[in-house]
Image (cartoon, rainbow, N blue to C red; front, side, top):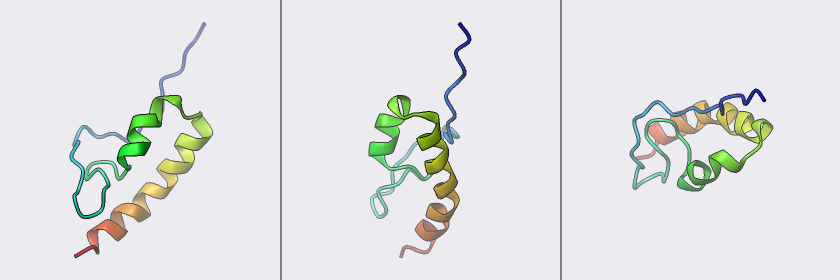
Length: 62
């Protein structure tokens, strides 16, 4: 039974910004990180597609 590895944007820089509520390494919220293993692959890929824009927006947060 071939079990595929779970897709993940984690880069092992795990710290959540108090200003944005997002991980400064990957851009996910704590809720997304906590539920990541139970999400289906389509949902994980959809979230990962949003992350670049989140990181750009987070950089603009004063």
